[in-house]
Image 1 (spheres, helix red, strand yellow):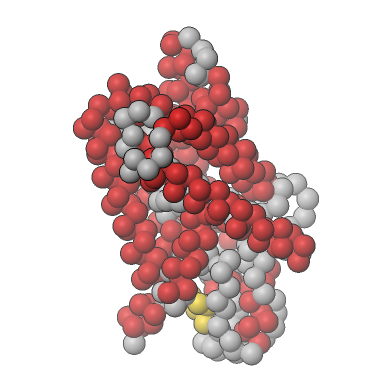
Image 2 (spheres, rainbow, N blue to C red):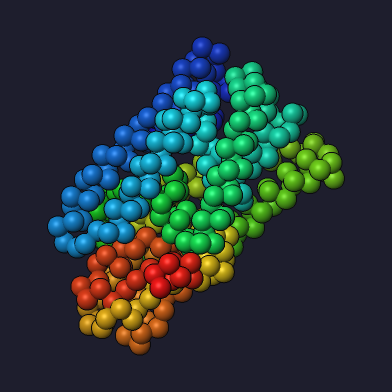
Length: 333
């Protein structure tokens, strides 16, 4: 359903009559805001009821609480207060998408479409929200690691992977990614990061006057199709077929935050008690990280793929695992 509505909104609406385009646009925004928010609340309650029967849910409760609060702000309260139903487009910092940069260009098609609806005051408010969110994500990651964005605030793949975790996969049996699959995702990670950086650098140079705008309209359209095909379609496919965290393997923003989390000293500590090598942590990890291997020798888990979801911590029967950063360690002392 989501893909069908998205296809109509991004593809057909531009060619439809004004009345039809308005209806399609309203349906898309209603789905993206109200339906998604309802999904997050309902899914969170059901997930906690299912998962809570087999393990503690301390970190999962924090994840789901964060998603509910943030979705309320981005999808309900923010749009109502600012009159901008597309506020979710400004909830993911660069280099995830260049929407905020395009909105700074009065000659862009994105600006031309939004100005009659939002006005200059609405556009300015949206950009201020984006700047505040970007600062909060960057600062929060330096303090709390990748968990802050990827497992508490991300309303693209993060919320879906947490809210619907017990249901994955809807097709086939649950299994961890093999070496070949992980290698493929590694290549995709750098490809998507390079692509995202290309769009970001282009728009920064364009806004600075270093590049003329002949290609702007084309690149803007290409980025839309990249989002629909390489991100929305691919991510939803992997939510169902592969794993809820499929897109997290190659999300360009996630890759940038992985480097920041290194600076934050993010790790899964494995020395709280004794590892009994049951393997529950490995089976719980949605990103196929070999946590047991490190826990056996009491070494910290510092893999770049770690999104800090805490599934391994919650499922460990001896409570030997702990998610931490330098900041969290200082508070615990």
